[in-house]
Length: 125
Image 1: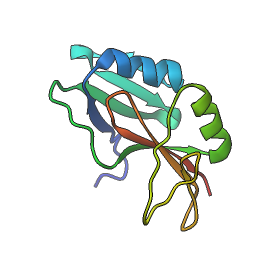
Image 2: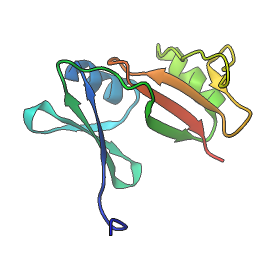
Image 3: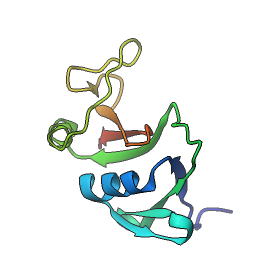
Image 4: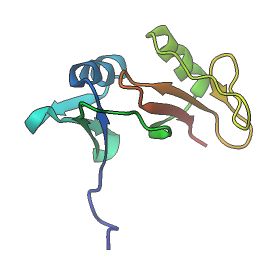
């Protein structure tokens, strides 16, 4: 039924200008602006992610967007040099001093956008 659809995901932010700067200037993602200030992130392969304003925005408690990368260590170092802080977790999912978790799957590191949404870089296997 939906095997050939152009599905997309979306999430909210509380400040579109900060989101635009973060996703475009910091992360280097192509962005277009639509009606009512809605942002579209244009992802490789034709994928799209919609970011919309929500005055009473509350960030999700889970990862809303994953970026597959060939080398998590190098990517974390590069993003850290751009001012991004990686999350530190203890317990079942434990991260190292850089914020990277490894062990039961691919290496992964989590960080937040300016609205507090959780994003990750995930090493391709």
